[in-house]
Image (cartoon, rainbow, N blue to C red):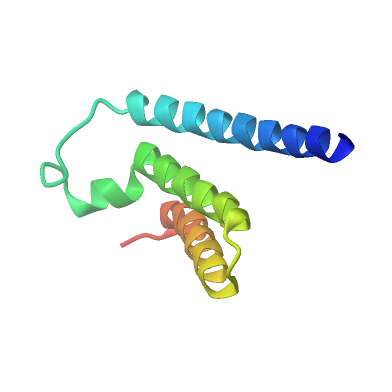
Length: 97
């Protein structure tokens, strides 16, 4: 009985975290007025705070979701991709072309 309660609580925490990340992502994505991928210059895509926020949030979501992957190689790959996305989003505002 106790294991079922703990498992349910863990599942609920995971669901709540996923819901919060989704809510944050949709809020950031809707803040940008929107344009097609080829309608903006590459410098806009790489320096816009909205695009960088979506990249960082996507990277954090990928990194966070890797904890449920059981096999080591795919889990490490997802963690690396997530960290790379967050670091890219954090460093691009400081890079001047």
